[in-house]
Length: 337
Image (cartoon, rainbow, N blue to C red; front, side, top):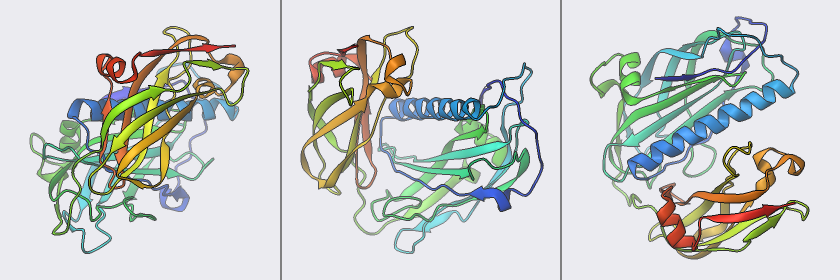
């Protein structure tokens, strides 16, 4: 279990979460190497916390001195443990008991993975309504049935077999968060040392798509990006292919010079239709590092990672600097005023 806290200040109010919660749904199934997928989850968790924190401070809240209380999951339960993609909605329902500090809960993110080698991932995320009063404790039933194909539930491309809930993140409205591993969740859900209470079974007698796209080439389109020339975007093309559902989107993550301040930047670039083979041009607005071009760092930026996902939301990603250098021909580009 990993807890991260930010300075916070808010009046706490204990009310019914059901009356306030707006379930902001979104789910994707990813099939990465284990190290890469967990690394991406950690990056996404930290980035989300940072964005929540900036909104919190921008809304006029003042920081208070520690000690601070990180949000926490007290216990949990999965209702329904067997799902057939031919009988929608094949959507897990997870009920969590939680508590937070005075700022109140903001959101929860849950990650299921297959136990098979291809490492498909199902991601569920729920958030409260914007600017809700602080809810510091309660019970939250979470289920996404999805509002578009491939989101919120197991779908016709999902890998059959066992899936385990092995990552969870809980955030408060001040940007504090706590991350939970598979072992943590097994204990909280009532099966310490085992995984049966956090495992579900998926049946798919159709045509699963368990293989992620391939990325065979890349080319930097903008070796130099000027902050004075809108839209101040880094551009690079990826040559991709996918043999079943087709590539849906790709991304390239870029980072400012070490110690210069600002965040890494990554935007998803979507195809107009499923792409079985071809090129996707990826654009990253570098000013997104600080949300303002006037405060964005200049100098030598680094290509930190890249990846692609198909319609089934199998994904491939690579964070290895040697691989990046071999594919792009370099790992850096310049940002100037």
